[in-house]
Length: 63
Ligand code: SF4
Ligand code: SF4
Image 1 (cartoon, rainbow, N blue to C red):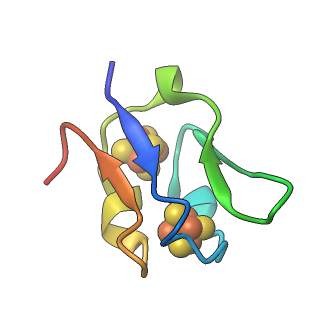
Image 2 (spheres, protein in one colour):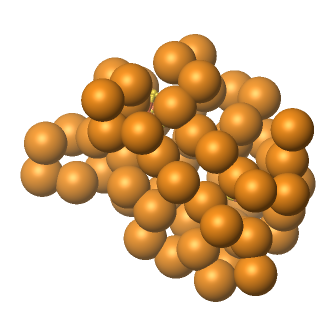
């Protein structure tokens, strides 16, 4: 299973990762920032890493 992390200091809450993720891995938390809610569903497509404007997302199998 891929390890997906969101750096809360970098995340602006833009929601791009939520829009692009085919597996609904991300959700917004109470502060309006993205959190990893369902890492077990990650399909390792790396789209979130590419789309995040803040470079806040790390997926261990993606560069
Ligand atoms: S794309 Fe990046 S900055 Fe935008 S909500 Fe997701 S983690 Fe935060
Ligand atoms: S790598 Fe793909 S499936 Fe996994 S969290 Fe990112 S966008 Fe979703």
